[in-house]
Length: 225
Image 1 (tube, rainbow, N blue to C red):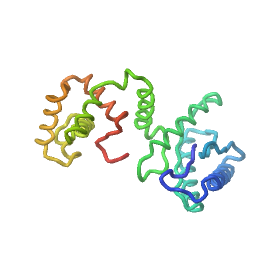
Image 2 (image 1 turned 90 degrees about the vertical axis):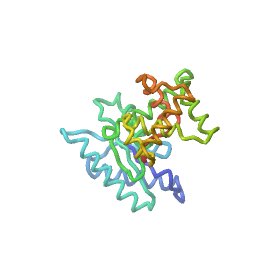
Image 3 (image 1 turned 90 degrees about the horizontal axis):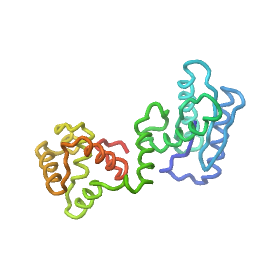
Image 4 (image 1 turned 30 degrees about the horizontal axis):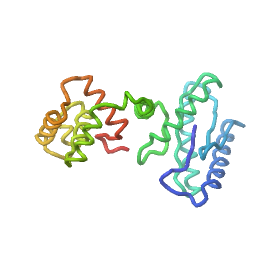
């Protein structure tokens, strides 16, 4: 489990507040599991806990929720928690920690606790964004031209495309996400294809365009960040 102060809120004394968070996490974990590893690394508190029985992961989630409630009240700063995958041995612990860190980054507004198994898709997209961003060949494509065209002409083709693709190419659902008439959405897509040479009939091109706009441009049709 990873715990961190909400990055959108500045604590009056970040370092001391993080140390107090460490004490709170350690106290709650030891009360339930005995003495276990709790450490503070780069502002985040990590707790390494055993899994006993088939419902171990659920118990961990309840513990994380309890710690977040108590810590947020005691520290007067919002606290968030991410739970990594359950792993078979100590050699795989680093992977679980990486999962927990990604969950903290993937939590949306109003979310303070989640396990990687609950938001796997969001975590996977974060990983893809990092991998794609490291490869020059994977960052090339029509998505850049769409964004540049929007910036130059004041159009909204990029968001229209993302909403349409997020909606499974359903024009009515895409129009609802955009808060426009379906005919407006249909017109924008037709114009985007005409001006930018995008072939929306090609499923491979749709997939790549969607991935790049979602991961590299950070656009999405839904409201959640």
